[in-house]
Image 1: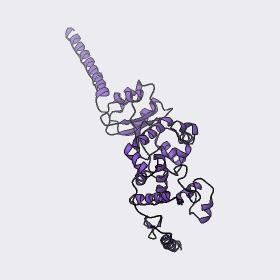
Image 2: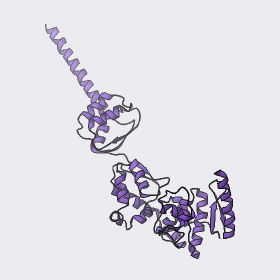
Image 3: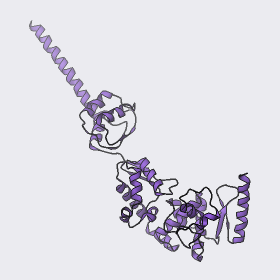
Image 4: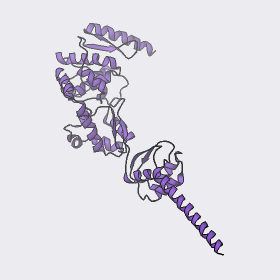
Length: 338
């Protein structure tokens, strides 16, 4: 009888030890061990609960032990809205704490390509950030909002320089704009301000002219040459006669600019009014800004598209030479459209 009791006690001790050991292993695994076989960019949207977030992670296929993740998330009542990066080295407990405490991973906000209107800028931001594009557009078109930066809607694109910026996915519209304006101000070093002054321009005027250069060509090697043409015109008081400004007057809806379009009444019509328009007609990239700051030195006053349609231009110092170049291009265009 005594032996049986001993064996029972020994058995119970073993069971307790096994259970305790199992519990200790589970606790260790939950807190310390990697429970993910790959990486996941997780976006937690407003209104999502812990269960939905858990299911989203589980459906990714990178969870080694689903039970471990379920255990640790079971005690999480709320998850913070945000973008989170789950890497292969993360434990279940770390992920649970990260989601509960809002330890976000920054995202890349990339402003690139053609940004010709405040709406286009708003859509690019809204497609990459939690902020709603309609809210961004309202901010960009609000005099009161832009007055915070000493500007108005006409100067919006003097405040923004296309680039890639790291920031919190949940940043507010104001926070996003604050960051863009701060980065733009930082880009304008004293050296660049001096270069602008050497061309007889303010940084804001550089942005205006750079936006016109951007409208003329995306062929970067030729941008300093085109910038030089417009600077030559400015210096002699010649109208810029820039077709991109006419396209802007018609909200970029024209398929082709005709002579009749050149009569449009607008301060942005550089065929009618001498000098720079009131503000940028697009968001100029750094290459165009640098082209205006460091233009090619030449005596060209005219240019037109090359009849080879290779994206380059033919340049001329006299109007007679320009007309010959223009006729060659027109013949090639008519031939192509047959």
